Structure formats: structure tokens, C-alpha cells
Image (cartoon, rainbow, N blue to C red; front, side):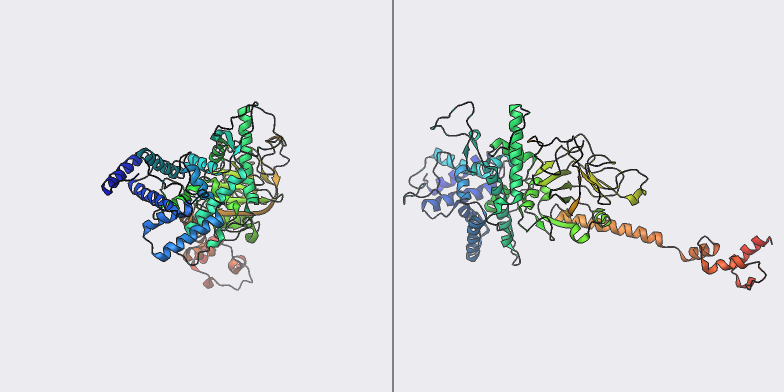
Length: 585
């Protein structure tokens, strides 16, 4: 679509006005992406393009006016990101499925000739506008239209499998399959999300200008797709799809196995219920590529790969997939994790556990590994305090991480969220459970860590949180292998290891630690005040007998005895007065 400079200016203004009415971007963002869009087309027409993510990443980075060395470094980092972290050919497939029309040919297809695919002829105004809108629509879907739309982009970027035939109906081979007629492999989707999260963390780390930054920690292992954490997360998606199919078919007959392939609707429901932050793995990466010069919008939650402050018995490295699983559950489980307690070095000591929690003013993540290797626990967002009553809010939830990933949010039927009650508080007179608990009742919380660490409880159901297993395989009930709530035989567990982490990001953790330090200072000041006694009052009480002392008790005992050697002159004025009263003088 050719034009003179004057016409081009007018066309740009018209395009921006057209896009401004339809796209969730500000004027500065529209101009920025508009320029990058046209420059990408230009280098593609000259057959100088590399890959979609590298090309668009470099063009958007140019807005920061970097030097030649910075440009060279940025390109190497983007090439490393594509070749070492992201799934093979992910960027080009993303461009093909979400940034161009269904009938357009991608610039990044394998070349069949030396003739460029997109620069051979002029575009009419309709074609120009359609391609421009398709590009901006794809960019918006990747982060500005909400998590549900971003999940659709991720589903389309996966390999599509034909849905099983139903009722013997065979679709025409000439008919393009719709989004509802194809399915995807959950393992592929989960692995893709994990790699996107690492890529976003990698890109963020490389822009902090810290020579000590260990960017290599974000390079995944070649066999990471087989990690139990990712398999568990994929299993949770299969289980959700299986339950959904049962509801649609209105059958109560347990399936023999979980579904192996899932639909876009399955992914949407699973993302909302189990992993609300999963879609942010793509939107956070795309924002860094499109707008490296500005922070993400405050209205959009970013995916920050968790960063551990200390070693852990649960996470086998800084890029552990279990950290990704947690970050998918809640925005508060992104960013810095500060270790408050670990049984490895602190021992199974309730005093130390309680001391690490009381007064801490931020969200916490409590993780338990039982002796059967089940990993489960609770997330809280309220400050910990000692109380005979439950407290907390609806941000609290229970979870199982391994062998299956399940999240049990508040059901709306109860408010018994969190509980911390030691034996020392009431000396046992309250007839309540002594320890830390979640859900259930003060006599028996649903998840309970006893003060003695004996007879700890993890039940399947209560009024506060959704039903589901914390111990064992969370999907056994779905497959008809167990009945939730019928038996308490399997609700007791022994702790193999226990950790508590302060979460929510660096700023939240620092503020919460400050609140705990302040609370400890207040508590210590009260203890010191209780110990402090005025000198004059102490001597008066001491001499009056209110404070017993063997050093002066003999004076009272020998007064009046014939063999007493003490004289009245040796007594203090107070003792003389007391002696007169006793002798009736």
C-alpha cells in the first residue's frame, strides 16, 4: 500500500485513530507498536528477518536508543532465549496462529523460493487495515484482554489433535477444524507455560544491569517436561477436564482413567479454578518484548518467577517446576520467597515455628511433606496471632502439590480460615486443639499441626474450604478409588519436613518482617517492664516480708528469744515498729 509522505502521515493518523477505538493501548503505546509493525514488514520484505520474537523484540528495544554494543547484546540474549528456553519454533507459531489472518501466509514459514512471501506486491487499503488490525488484535490477546483470552492464544500455539468422533459423525476433510473440534496435550501446554515463565524471568534478569546476576539459573533441564511438578500440574488439568465431561454427560459412573487430551474450554475453567496466574507467563514475556522501556500496567498482575532467599528441602533449584506451580496459584506466590522456618535446621520445634510466625504481617506459604511423600499445605494472607478463635480471610486456601496438584479455595459456607493456639496460652483449660490449624473446628481443624507434632491431621472435607484430598492421590475419588469424607482412617500423618515462607514479593516481605520485628520489640518491652521493680519499693516489700528472704528471716525468728544476740538498735525503723506491734508495746 504505497503513498506519498503527506499521504503516509495522514494514513498513520487514520490508522492510529482506528486502532485507538478498538485496542486496549494508550496513544504512546499505539505509536510505538505501529512503528515496530511497519519496520518488521520492511525487513521481512527484504528477506532480512530472523524470527518473530527476535525481530519484534529488537525493533521495540530500539525505542530506548541503545548503543551498538547494547543492540548486539540484546540480540544475542533473544537468540539464547529462543534456542535454550522457549519451546522449539514457539515464536513463529505464535505469529502464525495469533498475529495474522487465517488465510495469510506467515513471513516465518520455511522458504520454498527466494521470493519474499509478503513483499511481492502492493496492498489495497482494505488488506492493509485487515493485516494491521490482526497484528494489534494478536498483541492485545497476549496480555491486554484478560487471562481467558491469553489462554486461548496458548492453546492455539499447541499442536492440535482431532477430537474423537461422536455419534459416528465424520467431518468433511475439506472443512477447517474449529477451536472446539480440536484438542491439545496438557503436558505440552504446561511445559510451554513453564518455559515462558523462565523466559520472562531470564529477560527481566538481563535488564537489571547486575553483573552478579545468575541468568543461567533460568535455563531448563533437557528432561524438565518429565519433572513430577509439571506432570502433577498437567494431571490436574486432565482431572478438571474429566470432571467437566462427567457433568456435561450427567453421569455418576467413575471413569477408568483421566482424559489424555483437553479442549480450550477445559483449559479456561482449569485456569480460573486451579491456576489463575498461568496465562500471565505469556503476557509478562510479551510485555517485556513489546514495551521494554516501561513497567507493566498496575491493573495487570505480572508473573514473577519465585526467587528463594535460602535453601529448601522442597525445591531442587532456583528454576524448580514446583515454584512455577505455586506461582500459578496466586499473584501473592510470585516474586521473592523469604524462609521463616524450616524443620531441617530449626527442628520440629513448635516454639520455634510459632515464634517465626507470630507478628509476621504478610502472606505466608506453609508446606508439609508427609512420610508418604505427599506434599501439601496452606496459603494465608493475614498476619499470624495467637488466639483461641479462628481468623483470616477468603484469600486463604489449602492445596496439594504432589502427587497431584489441587487447590481448595473457601467454599463460602464457613469462616474458620486459620488458627494458632498453644497450650501455654490457657494451660489446657480451653479444651481446644493446641497447635496450628486451617478449616474444621477448634476441637479438630481440617489441616492441623499439633503442638507435639504427633497425631497431625489432614481431612478431606470441612465447611470452610472446598472438598478434596490433602493426603494421598487427590484424584482417587474421581476414579472411584476412595470416597471423600467417609472414613477418617487415612487422615492422620507424620511430618517428614516442614517449611514456612514469607511470600508476596520483596516489598511485601520487608514490610511484614518489619511488623514482626516491631511486635517482638513490644513483647520484649512488656517482659522487661514486668521484670523491673522500683528499688525503694523492692526494699520496702523485701523488709516487710512480702518478698521472702532467708537472709533476714532469722531476725523475726529469734526476736524475743532469751539467747538472741540482736539488739533493737540493729533493727531498721520499720522493723522496730513491727517489733513493738508484736510485743504489744
